[in-house]
Length: 330
Image (tube, rainbow, N blue to C red; front, side):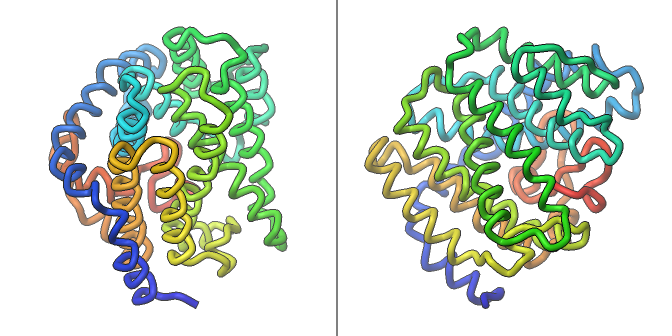
C-alpha cells in the first residue's frame, strides 16, 4: 500500500516528465488571463442570454469559467504538440459543455436527463426542461456551428462514447460493484472524454492517434479518481482509488509510457509541453489528495479576469448545482 511518502517518491522518480514544466509556469499567468478572456468572449454571452435568474447565472459563470481556464492549459498544449491552430472559441465552448454536462448529471432529480441527452448527441429530438438544459443545447449547437464538420468526423463518435460511458458509470454508485466493472468504466470514461476535447482541435483525427489519446485519457481519469478518493468515498462513489486498487506509482508509470508513445508519434520536443502539463497535474493531484483543504485556502485574485495560476489549478471548482465541498463528482 502506498502513502504520502510513497507518492512523493513516485513524483521524484518521475521528475524527467517535468522538463516542460518551467515553460508552463512561466506563461501560466498570461495564459490564464487569455483563457478567462476567451470564456467571457465566447461563452458568457450565451449564458447571459439563456439563464434568467441572477444568482443561478452567477453560479454558472463561476463554475464554467473556472473549469474552462483550468482545462484550457491541457487543450492548448495538445494543439501545440500537434501543430494545429489553437481554436480558442471551440476550446472555451467545449470545456463549458463538458463541465455543464457533468454537473447536470450530478443532479438527483434529473428527469432521466441521460436518456434525453442521447437524442441531442445523435442530432435527434431533445426537449430541454430547464434553463440549464437549454444552455447545454445552446453551447453544443454553437460548437457544431463553429466546427462545421460532417457527422462522420471522429468528434461525434467520441461524444456518443462519452455519454454511453457516463450512463454506464451509474453502476459506480451501487454497493458491491465489482472491481473489473470499475476498471472497464474508468477506461471508457477517460478514453472518450479526452478524445472528445482533443478532437475539437483536430478534424478527421487518424485512428492511430485516436488510440493513443484514448490511452492517455485513462491516465487523466485515474488522476481525477486518485485526487477525489476522499470525496468519492464520502458520497458512495466506487472508483479504483476508493477500492484501494490505485496508487500514484501506477499513474506515474502509465504517464511515462504515454510519454514514450507521444515522443514516437509527435516528436520529442513537440510532446514536451503536454507531458509537462500532466506532470504538473500529478503534483497538484498529490497535494489535493494529501491536503484537500489546500485548494480552498488559496484566494483568487480576480473574479472577472483570471485567478492566480496556482489558484486556478489547485482550487476545486464548484458544481453549478451544489458547492465544491458537497459535490458528488468533479
